[in-house]
Amino acid sequence: MRKHKIIQVLVLVIALVPSLLMAQAVEKNSLSLNLKYYNDNNITHHLLVQAKSKIDGKFQQIPNIPVEFYITTDADKANLLGKGITNGKGEALIEIPPTAKMEWLKSPNQTFVVTAAATKNFDDAKGELAITKAKLKIDTAEGRMITAKIVALVDTTWKPIAAVDVIVGVRRLGGILNANETQTYPTDSATGGVTAEFKRDSIPGDQKGNIVLVASVVDNETYGNLTAEMVVPWGKKSVYMTNFDHRTLFARRGHSPFWLEILAYTIVVGVWSVIIFLLVQIKNIKKLGVE
Image 1 (cartoon, rainbow, N blue to C red):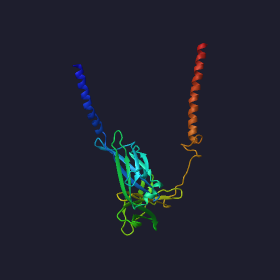
Image 2: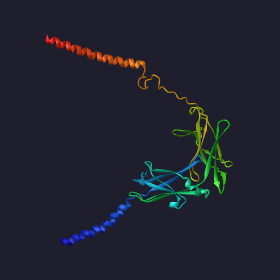
Image 3: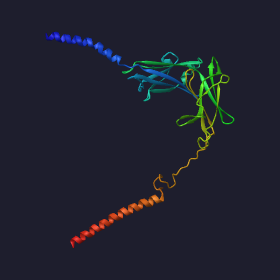
Image 4: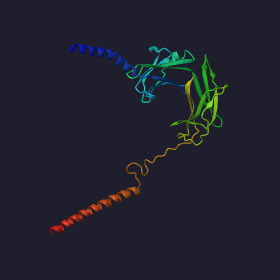
């Protein structure tokens, strides 16, 4: 009888093992890889991937996901551009290396692929991005006018592109400050260009008054992210002044204001005078007690 019960328990365990394995497999979340392309001043090109997953009904950035970047639709080792691991924001970035030049020059259109292998908590994933090669150029005109132009590679010819929104402004620490009240400018059909008037006359520059003008295309479905920069002396000159060798409240040691030093020394002398006076009085009291 006891032997029969043991056999029943073993059969039940064996029957439950596949169910437990399936339950563990179901707990894995699907991973979404969003790939972006950046052309920086027509000099360097880089790719950025954002890893996200829907957890508890909300999309969240997923860190520590190993990813691989490829050029062309074939995720073959010969087309590997580089590898990375997503950071705390769920992002990983690589610069397109010079070794991809031959593949890059084959066509006016280019496709990039990013892949992520399956992990303990997420299924494997793949993301693709197809772009048309384009360039963004920036220049200035008389009267502090900023011009920007977009050209795209059609067959073997660079042609102007219309109806692309361009942000024109000046680079600051927090991003791009618009050149005036207008947020974006659509390129025209004739030249693929835009013109913006610079109205930030009082903006501070470096010691020579230089500032960096920026024209930018953000997350365009066809051309990706394009940026062009130009240095111009349109800002206010910044004169760097230091109080290192002057007597100020926050100066280095030995350079504090005279009034502060007099106040501090007066307090120290006053406190020690009271202490010495009390010690003398205590000594006198002891003498009186002995007599």
